[in-house]
Amino acid sequence: MKTENDTPSSALPSASPRAADAIVRSVELQIVSGDLADGATLPAERDLMQQFNASRTVVREAITVLTGRGLIENRPRYRPIVRKPGYNTLLDVMADVTRLLLEEQSGLKNLYESRVFVERILVREAATNARKNDIANLTAAPSLNKQSLDDSAAFYRTDTDFHAVLYQIPGNPIFPALHEAYKVWLHPHWEKMPRSPERNYVNYCSHASIHAAIVDRDPDTAEKELVNHLNSAWEYVRATFDTPSTKITSR
Amino acid sequence: MKTENDTPSSALPSASPRAADAIVRSVELQIVSGDLADGATLPAERDLMQQFNASRTVVREAITVLTGRGLIENRPRYRPIVRKPGYNTLLDVMADVTRLLLEEQSGLKNLYESRVFVERILVREAATNARKNDIANLTAAPSLNKQSLDDSAAFYRTDTDFHAVLYQIPGNPIFPALHEAYKVWLHPHWEKMPRSPERNYVNYCSHASIHAAIVDRDPDTAEKELVNHLNSAWEYVRATFDTPSTKITSR
DNA sequence: GTGCTATGTTTGGTACGACCATACACCATA
DNA sequence: TATGGTGTATGGTCGTACCAAACATAGCAC
Image (cartoon, rainbow over all chains, first blue to last red; front, side, top):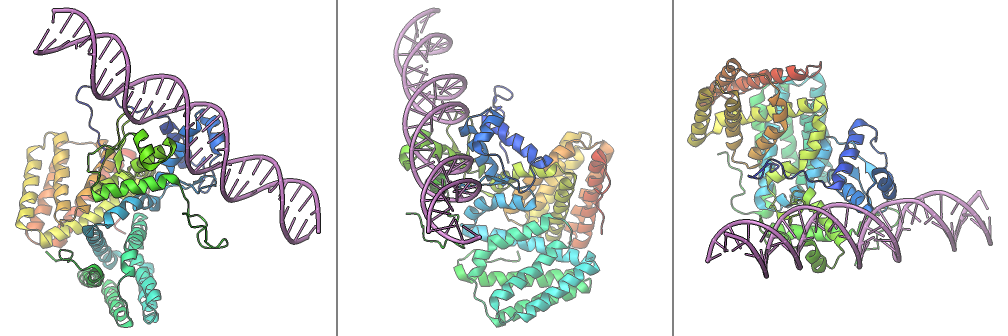
């Protein structure tokens, strides 16, 4: 986390008076307060200069920072577009660093393992507390799976959709955003996974089993089926870059 | 060098050839490859100008971007310090946006709820697969709690330590980083929570119960105790900013 | 010799001005 | 009216200059 180490000699000599920070803060405030609506465009840089009484250097630095935080979108020759921060923004910001972390073998494994943990509790939650509405969504997804067994690309989409339902059930916007993040980050590696109607059928059966267990209000079975499902998928992905020590063990 | 052959009507008209990006990528590579070790300092800006044959404007923009990604640390009048990215870096990057999201009431609630979900699966995992070593850590923590019942500040620390153990058990570095993030983001709000030796004792008992259930290899009870524990804590925090609709219901 | 101070150098932060390429609005011509 | 050329606004880049703080060094006092 942020290094908050005060220098041993005194309290806070830092208080970095970077001029751009003031602009960043000001724009941030305008965004969260709604003065700058989502989708609105920022004034031209030369106008911001006057507005904040700063040089273009500083204004541009502020824009760079805000872009890095995902608060504005900055295409080369267009005005910056305001993007009101949400949970998806949060994951967006992580994307660049995540890409670096995923380049190491253990990175992908760790990320996938975390997904397994999350989905384990999500299926348990579903089995325990899913409402009629959720069950309906959860029922529709596997049937769509079944219809696209022969089209691996389509199956991949409906496969993802099934898991997406799990992330919606808690009603917490963090989870759908998290699912989106897993999807984006894992997708490049899943692309390389061999697919076949037979393999799709196995996955479909897993989804059906999980769905059945949820309908039965049986969290233990639901979790067990999910773990089997995800571990099996991992084995397929692992085969595309097989190395020792990437195997998920059950401890 | 830049591709100018994309179809003008479709696809990606962007292909932004921002000069700073090249520097960013280059430095990123040097960091992950180890050419730039963690803790090393970047060359002076005027040296980087020559090295990349770019203007200082561009060099400084690259540094700003890298700082935003948490890959370098940039104090006002010092050389930028290289920080090899890890999972904690990941959470660091989210900090600024998270701060904005937490300013909305539902932000805190959503974040805390996600923590409950995560810890639910963590205690289940602990009850199922914790090794002797983990159990030992888990045993030590509550006893430290007990010793600091009368010192609320100390108790808060040991309280956090107990939960930290849960995040260590899976052996996945993502979880300790996540715990650190929860700690930092939730801390300001927990600060405002009223504390007392009696309240500390209640929390201690919860920890003891969770610990006992884990030792008994009883994930259901462990989860139940944890949920009670965390929901109870939430009620105390909620009291500091009471508004309707922030109550956590069990659906 | 040791320790402190004054001074010059390095370096990041900021400002200003200039130029380029392109998106876009505008206008003139067919 | 449709089309194509033109001018302007705007972001991207460059170069220079200046300031203030950090750092290195030399010089001074003891």
